[in-house]
Length: 490
Image (cartoon, rainbow, N blue to C red; front, side, top):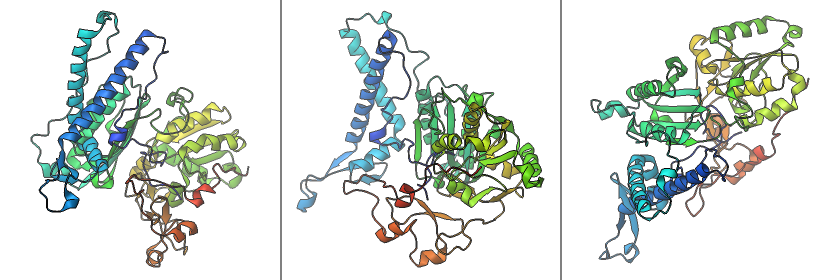
């Protein structure tokens, strides 16, 4: 059992930045020169000022939405109480208004931040004893969130926010000199188009899955393809699509990270540039067909390796594959290390959902220097099913949004954990703090069997938050006792 999906096509932990006041991109993620370097000292001061200005701007915006109950209110309980009004909504606690402002008024807060920084800069000019012409100047023009946003003035609100839409899945490995700047643009663009989803940004590229109306997602793709960073690298066919929309995601989560898919190893140590050989869906299909047609003795020279997590491969996989029983992609390097003899001298055909995990997963396997060849499916299962819906993939494709699965042929290969009947529709464990996924059929659900394990079943439904109102998560016993990295029999 696992936690519900969060990262796009990768680790399934809720580690993507939620746009709340507490996580309002105030932490800095980029590497800097030595602190003794003058430019590093200047950058540190500038970033500290920016963070302070952003906090102040956020607080000012929230304060402006504050409403104090009328002292003439006859009910003593309401006298002097505070709530907040914004966008025709009422918020009774700070957590609610903070989430709302962070998710929907990012541009407003950004403009206020710029105004505060301008005031600070003017004050510095008057008081500073250091000549400004000796300080290094920031590269490039100051970023404005309104940059590179499509004109939607001619598009009706219903067309832009329609629930009849699609979900995009994409990634692009490329050199990103300023991840924070790209993050600002992504937030502004997605909010402008009413998109929801998850986007990870790093110095090595971008990885995302977003949903919205057909018009909104088409505009998003157009803007991505025209961006100078991705022009000529990211292609229209690199966007995998499936039926859905913004309703497939609870919110918008965009953040800057060290990796765009969490392998758990610095991109400086294992780079996407050292990836295995890409195979088109047709080439991969031919290789799998050849592999399956061989006798067992001949098959020992090749491994068809599923790079995903166990809960993904449980409901769908390629025939004849090796599916590691791991819970997170960040465990994949340890799995390789513990099973080196299994891969020694073999040809390895790798695959994952959309291709991104294979990029660095294959690079890590190649770095061991033990395989005859390492290949992987370009575009992942998603692209394969577009060309071969009746091919060698069996079952459903797990996706990292609230749909959990998409189907090409309706095959069911997994079973209900309680009665053993065929079933492949995941739902969250009924003990909310656990947040693991469980396969339990409708008949068992009616019997009250809705937890991921006996321990959670005994606990029953519990609230998912502390009295303070903050959400929390606890590790389920079936996860805590699970073997982290399995060792295969050679």
